[in-house]
Image (cartoon, one colour):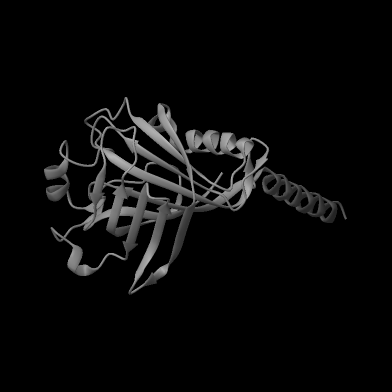
Amino acid sequence: MKRSLSMLTAMFCAFGMLDAMAGTVKTPTIQGTYIEARTCDVYTAACFANSEVGLAGEEAIMAWDVREGAFNGVDLSGLKVVAVVRANATLGDTAADPLPAKAIIIYDARASKIQRKALSAFVKDMAGELVANVVREEITDITMNVDKCTKDGCGSLRAGDLVAIETRCIHQADNTCGNDTNFYGPLTDVIDAMPHFTSYEKFSGEGLGIKWNDGGRRGAFLATFAR
């Protein structure tokens, strides 16, 4: 009888520990999809990446589409926000300091003033020091799609006439050195990031001292995020 009681006690203790562990799992308060495009190849081999270091990759476009959730207590469900960054060195190069960087934040035209403030805080929380120095803010219509790859593409982004990104899946013929891999990772905390081929990438805004019309490189990531 004492042995049975001991076994039951052990079982209840085990279940209690499982419940406690389950209770510590953090439920995301904001989640959605993410697109990033850089002005250098992110999926490549060292032989190719080394030829770009210091010559390309100082710029990046990051975009978040909030599927659902809130930040700082403000509901951001369905809203989108874009950050455009110009750094001081090739982003991801561990031998150089990308800071100080300059950033522009582009807000969804549907966002209220309170929501724009929350979106700004969200972007700064996600991208950190890269967006600490915001030199300009814009408000415009933003459309963003992250879909399964088709012959026509995978992910796309439009932010008025300021930003445009078109991507497709990476094909075997896109490889350069034969040992290509994710040489650089995404610039922010994301989930299940997959490198993609940037068919088209454009920034035509003001404030960064540079505009670009780029593409034809393996320079994009598509992912999800949860915070």
